[in-house]
Length: 93
Image 1 (cartoon, rainbow, N blue to C red):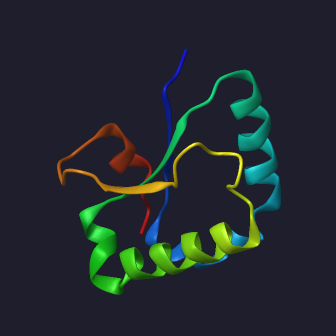
Image 2 (image 1 turned 120 degrees about the vertical axis):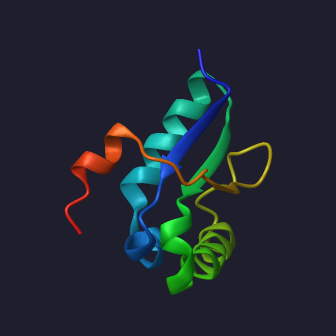
């Protein structure tokens, strides 16, 4: 079982978060089965472009709309450590 769900958010996609109705419907269904904390993960390489600020604004809007009103606590933002991982192999930027 899980206690938190971590969503990796590339810096360029956070502005579209309020339009991701299907994502939040899926998360709502998961929460019915097992309540969890929702975490959005950013990598340090995404931060210079203002991704953290954009994510905070997007989460504020998502909260205002009511997409995350099923959660016991508000979503949080975590900054990943900047080190090499196998996921970097998939990054073609």
